[in-house]
Length: 269
Image (tube, one colour):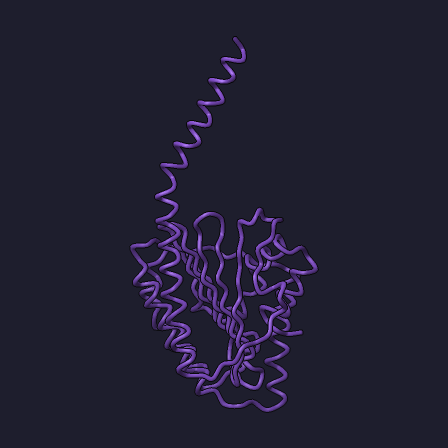
């Protein structure tokens, strides 16, 4: 009798699992396709405007870091990087990340050449079904004032009324408050705001590109200040933590996390 009960229970559980899979599959596929479609919108625009305005060449990345897809995370994380460089940019990194079954993340990280007074641009946009995480950071550790930066920073601040319509997201990185500019964006949204998010992103990227094109070469002393500021930011990020670097610590372990962040993401080694 007990075996008949166990057999019935087993088949019931299997049936429920199959039913759940059948019901969930269309929603999972829809979320994956939506995430891929939104990723492509951001990626294609970024590549278009960057290649139209700058001559970029490939930046070599160690083979083991070109795609991060470890068994340690049960193959639920897959991160592929495309890294480039140019006369005004030390690195232009595009990360294509798939998280779990259906989440997609677009990342763009631009590191300026130390010879120019430019901030870093860091973008992370996550698509989770109908939910969005929307982060754009303008990171300026050197804080060297000049008219080019001031005028373009004001152009970004002019987007505040539209940005304020988004749900703000708390960021627990107090050590970075003085270097992450006040017009940086940390928000949550949903698919109904996709057009607004893309509009804001395009505006910020266009302004950043204009700022980079109009930047004047620095004196050796000020160039060194830019370099020191960037290196301080990376060192402090590793020491005190941030959402992205903690993910790589989980995926790669502490030593390889440090190498990935310093050499692959920021190129300071």
